[in-house]
Length: 90
Image 1 (cartoon, rainbow, N blue to C red):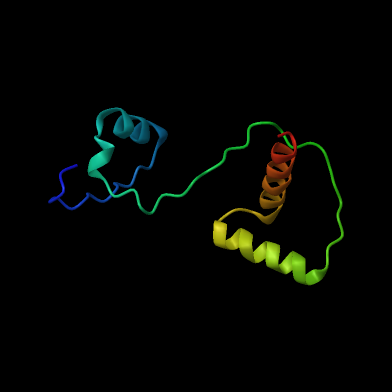
Image 2 (spheres, helix red, strand yellow):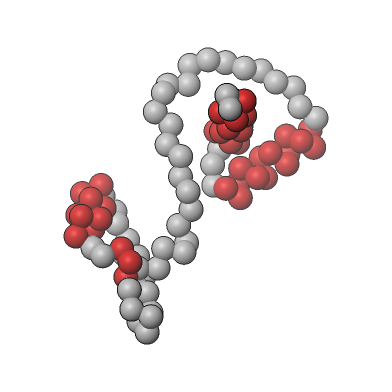
């Protein structure tokens, strides 16, 4: 992207096909990607169960953080557990 051109806004991509076509054909360096955030996809089925009691304040803080990150709070808990397990392997 040249230094004098303002970046283009990302188009609304409403289907997987539109997104695939866009990524395959667009020069992404021409677009403003500053609003993007990391995303983690979950593929394994979550079929195990864990009950944990937390102080109410901690649970509310966890739920508020999940809202800010745009994920369900149970997914955020799984992410924290996964991160902890990964870091303990090192």
